[in-house]
Image (cartoon, rainbow, N blue to C red):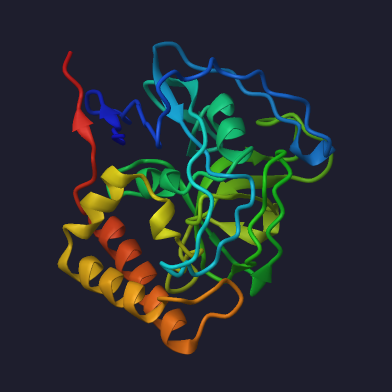
Length: 275
């Protein structure tokens, strides 16, 4: 089960991602109406498209630090979306198309942030400017149990300017974002900035829920491999809600090692497209 992003030309790459794909991907689902008026969105797609296959994990998103001995749900079936060759340019932001956003935010996708936040991607990053913000996903999917914290890095998925442009919603402007843990959150205009207000932070990553090809690529890094071995050793026999201090410390060390490697440009299962 590979995870590939296909880059075409010098512009933003088109993306073909297979997150634990099943043998027969289902057709793209129609975006169902969202109950919250803040989250009702509409966006057009540019021409030239590629397929993207994305398989979510089970609906419950917030796993926190993941001890190796704890049994957790595995990846679910894959679904396919159409993705344009270039990002949607809006309000000086590089955004994924609406269909991709809706698919990402209706389930938890642990692999997506690893690919979208890799060093050379052009997707616009955002950073939390408040001390803490409750994690609320208004696009119909699961929310993380962990709050967003000051300077936490996210991928901006959509922007509502509040002046009738961009996404069509009622009320004030705001953002929909993807966190490092693979869940989405909806933020107010005043809660996010596109410049780093401090040392960037991140939501916790569940290593064991990453696609095997991404795990393999990450474990090629000596620091990540050592941190993973330490985490497995310290968390053996632990259960969710009863993690000891050594397990929590080892899990954070693994998390920090992964984020540092992705930000610095570790080689992921990404290949350049042939014309």
